Amino acid sequence: MAGDFTIALESYDGTDKDVVVDSGIDKIGHRAFTNNRYVHSVVLPEGIVEIEDEAFSACVNLRSVNIPSTVRVIGAGAFKGCWRLEEAIVPEGVEELGLKTFARCRSLKALTLPSTLRSIGDACFQHCGDLKALVLPESLESIGASAFYNCKALKDLTWPGHLETIENEAFRGCVALEDVELPESVGWVGQRCFKDCASLASVALPSHIEFIEEGVFEGCSSLDAVVVPNDLSHVESRAFADTGLSQDDMAFPEGCHIASDAFAQSAPKPVTGRAEWDPES
Image 1 (tube, rainbow, N blue to C red):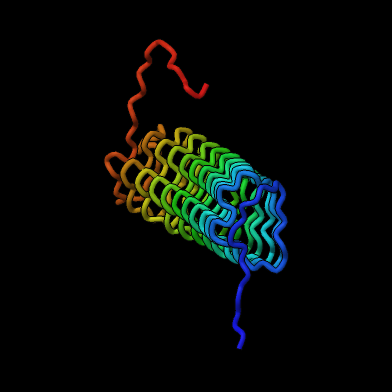
Image 2 (cartoon, one colour; image 1 turned 45 degrees about the horizontal axis):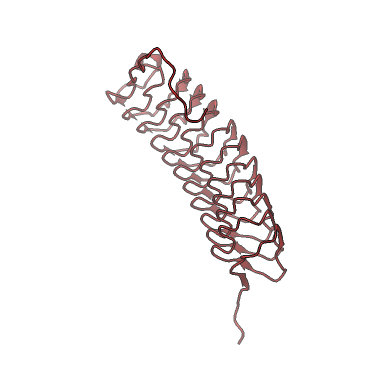
């Protein structure tokens, strides 16, 4: 009796700028295009169900690739380091994006996520520095550690109503983000989640949050309005450090334990009287 089988494109080492993958292929194999510096565009056929781990990683000149509607699995690091990739449309049916799937796609400007997506993995969009706006789908339940770390242009973010957990440093260094209003469904916001979000001015936390974790808002130097949860019981170390806020600026529930350094402020840097050389200038 004949069993199920797949036909995979396991490796491509050609020098064509524009690649059209033949129909009949079921999946793009592990590291199939990795480090190919020639390819600028890839057309994938309908029928592909899986793009394996690191399939297109470090294709630094890849500008466009379609992800067919039949794809259900996109592996870890599948598009990691595709510096010039400007748009990604993740098809309906994909439920999970894993570790570093689109990390360091620093030219990524347009991103569409499916209504079936339930989780965004660790460092999934880390260092996507040109991404300015994103709608997170209502199906989304979890955002992994460092998922949007250092997405410096991210300003407009639509939060889903069923989100439950946001892990450590998920939005750290998102310096353009100005306000955060988390849905009531969120029960956990990890350590240093919004650290160094220098433009963040207002925050509304769900009423049932019990812990504000270590360093969550540390370095948010524009922060001036925080809606404190009714059920808050602990504010951990450096939660509001280097924000300019003090404990007296906020109304905490009676009995809430506040760490002694929760509002610690760093000493200002001394003025030397001369300009320092900037190697990036």
